[in-house]
Image (cartoon, rainbow, N blue to C red; front, side, top):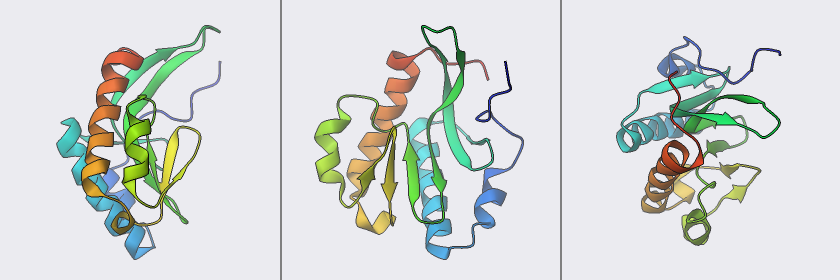
Length: 143
């Protein structure tokens, strides 16, 4: 089986963020890094080349495929700040209309700027998403 692309790396997330050319994306990324560290109690880790994740869980599909993934995370992409792991819990459905300007993807949320969304709702989504991934979705991993 090939090596998974999304696994923890030794790259320092702060150095990764410092290299983000877009100043708004870089600043929003730094703010989300601190917020996710505070809310999850987990240190930031790079997962693959461009996702900053917090905590982890082990998954196993009926097909036998298994691996580890970040419980919650984000990536400061060129066009959007992408937030991962915040929509798997059914409780997120009631919060998303209150979040503010965003677009939903498959397993992620796209945000233009943090200033476009409600910070209290974002905090709730992060807390709920982390709790769900580490206690309900799958078991915490050892990585």
